[in-house]
Length: 213
Image (cartoon, rainbow, N blue to C red):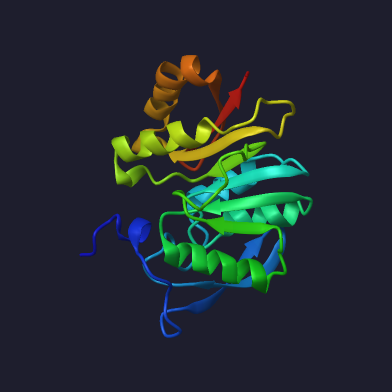
């Protein structure tokens, strides 16, 4: 049995033999995208991601938006399609995921997608995000997950509209409620954020994190 975290950390881009094309629905359109083994949900849009895409509002029309843990790109592609005037940053630790996201953005003619690693040389330090959409990698463990959220929620811009904020989808039985409590207990004071349950569907919670300052 493969390591359950393999799809989070697979290194190099997929080979021609590994990549395949599947049909999915992105922002109301049926499109063909490239997927490959070693990337999260490599044959469909994951059920949690579907819930997020259904429940989150239309994204802010401009500014910088973030898909955190982009995989092959379903969230980033949706953001870029629905907000053509925004710059969409697709971040993932896997170069394979980033390569697929770049390929899929080019395939769909979405020039406003920027696929970047989370480390040095990735997203410039002065970029803040009007909105963050994420199906976060819960299975990497709390230490990694909490570090990731602490880092990126610190770059969330103060909330100014109903579309702003971080929208996180987490399966209920994988700790959605405990994650909401952690954000409140650990990040509310230092970052000036607050979290509410925006929606529940099919065993998933959609958490909305907003920032006051």
